[in-house]
Amino acid sequence: MTRWDRWMGWAGSWKTLAAGAIAIAAVATATQQATARAGGTCGGGKGAKLEHLERDVARLGLPQDQLANVYEVIDQARVQRRAFDGELHVAHERMRALLDQDAPSVEAVTTQADSIGALQTEARKVELRALVQVRNLLTAEQWQQLESEKRGHRFHDRAKPESTL
Image (cartoon, rainbow, N blue to C red; front, side, top):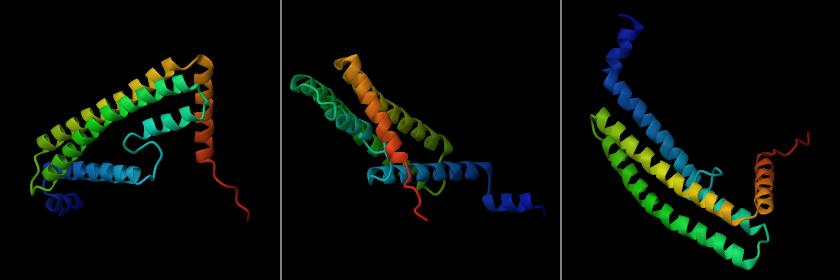
């Protein structure tokens, strides 16, 4: 008996392997999302892009009326994003229920993965629309200042302290 035969005897069939791979991917995604929600990684949590945009705009020192318009765009995007967050939660619960079955259907799991991906895409579009709308409310100079501050923070966030050894 070869190693492959022993492996296949243990693994069962290609469907079992596929379901296992999908389950591992789902667990990895859930772990990443849990870390992001806990504030573990930058840009990964629900609405983190909107939070960062709001923080960065606040640093620009915009006139009050312009700032109010920008915040209105961000607030509207948050409301839209929250609707997707609820739908995503339900979709992830459905995925967990599928994966908890003794013999999950590959088709059902991949269909649910497609649903989750579509919802995530729509939620990201909400954030992108808000970003473009905010950009259109700013002057070219203000946008350039915002971009340079974001680049500065990204560099600062990644910078590692020098060793004192």
